Amino acid sequence: MNRSTKILLTISLIALAIVSALTYLNLSFEPYASAKSQANDIAKEKAGIVEPDYFGNYTRQKQYYAVGGLTKGQKYRYIIIDAKSGKTDTFNKNSAPVRQSIVNGVVDRYNAKKILHINLGLYKDKPTWEVTFQKKNGSIGYNLVDFKTGKSVQIINNI
Image 1: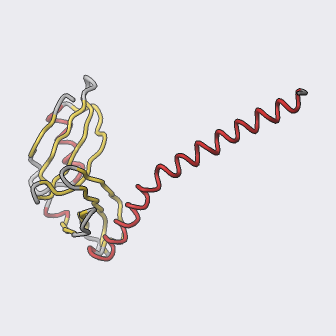
Image 2 (image 1 turned 180 degrees about the horizontal axis):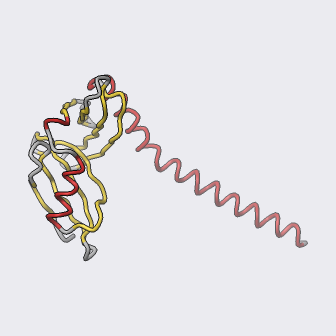
Image 3 (image 1 turned 90 degrees about the vertical axis):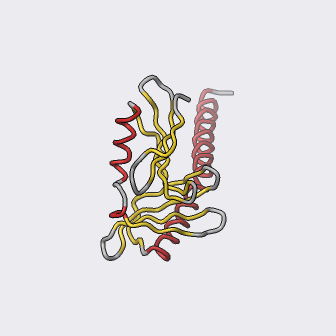
């Protein structure tokens, strides 16, 4: 094999590896993107959310998708969608603490270094935030926080 053939073969293998990696990434994000798109459609139809800016995937006893965003009347609203049955519950933001205040409360209470995610769902039939965080010592914690009061409902700490 001459030098130019080796170079062409090397470039072809690198290009194949890049295309394979991009295809794998695209396929792995497809279910998430599909769930988000469907949840946004339901949020528009059932809750009037026209400018969604939050999407969460809450999984405890059941799986829920949540969408938050502005309505045509510029009111902020959340909708929680049962992933299996499609049943929905809608909540206005003014009836609950702001998402950022929930995050700040968890950071303060549990000395969290980093918030990994915050998802909205139903726990014991009540709207609840699930906040996953990493502490400064590297351990992981989960805090369930009541949507309306901002009080801690359950904590799983130092995992």
